[in-house]
Amino acid sequence: MNVRIRAALVADIDALVAIENAVFATDRISRRSFRLLIENDTAEMLVAEANGILAGYCVVLYRRGSGVARLYSIAISPEAVGRGVGRVLLEAAENAAYENDRLILRLEVREDNPRAIFLYEKNGYRRIGQEPDYYEDGATALRYEKMLRGDVPFATTVPYYEQTEEFTCGPACLLMAKAAFEPGFVPDAVMEVRLWREATTIFMMSGPGGCEPFGLAVAAYEHGLAPEIIVSFLGALFLQSVRSDEKRRVMELAQVDFRNRVEAYGVPVEYRNFVLDDIRHALAGGRLVMVLVSGFIMFGKKVPHWVLAIGDDGDHIILHDPWVEDERGETKADAASIPVPYSIFMAMAQYGRQGLRAAVILGKRQ
Image (cartoon, rainbow, N blue to C red; front, top):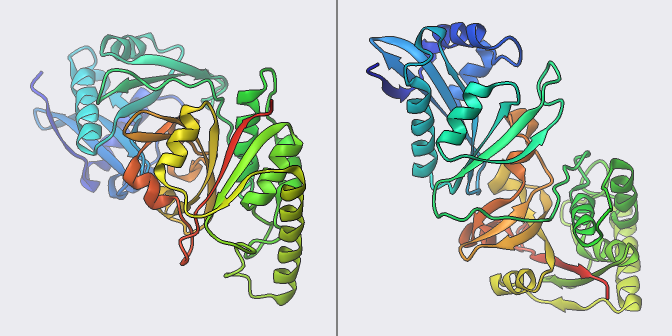
């Protein structure tokens, strides 16, 4: 079949919906979602056209600041099945991801879809996990990835944990670190909220409080880890956006308590801007690093956010980001083991007008 690949247009939506309804019994992309995907600057939607008729489509999603792309969906019209359209679309998706400087293309596929599994494995995808009860009908998803640049995929033993609340990124990172250093420990939402209660600054702009490095270090120490702190600012943190004098006072008192406990526990503290070599050295020594970033580069929100640095491949810092952008169609596969180029990592690893840099280096207590 002579197939031409091009960008999807709004005018294609009727044909796309027809293919979707013919191919999938559940988990269908709606007409509205097709339009959003076509217009979204973090998505790339391609169609395969044969003799002027749409024979299939694929959607690739991009997370800002990341070296990973995700094949969100691929579908071939029943009339075109078995005629090479799937292979052509898969190659087009890989080329699109490569041209957008992505290192890895990841995807999910139903466990009971042998035709698709054969296509992916034949084209160099390796299985990296599975997700039970992933689809609407309860079917299991198998997770696959392919390296688009380089030959050796990054491997990690650090388990991924998705935060369950908007304000628990720091505790979620602590849970991942604790699980990495304590075999048999299984993170859960109860412990996540407990750690947040133990590390929170009480208030954060509006709503429940966030966590600053000293509170997180105290919680890490009290739960058996060996923390070290590098922070660029001396004094109470995250007060610039707090207008209430009462809230500021309570936050300051909470942070004084954390600093006193850090000193009592003998946790090392350095007041300076961390540099890339600090993170790389810690990772090379078998430790993990909680890093404060601005959420703007990754998901377009100027909020303080904690991520966990789990590795270094010589060009990228590898991150577990506990936040999954569900409304943008992300899954855990998009947020786990994210390779971030050094320059982008250092650009995102600061927060606020003062460019606050903060890192909590975590190791196993001897």
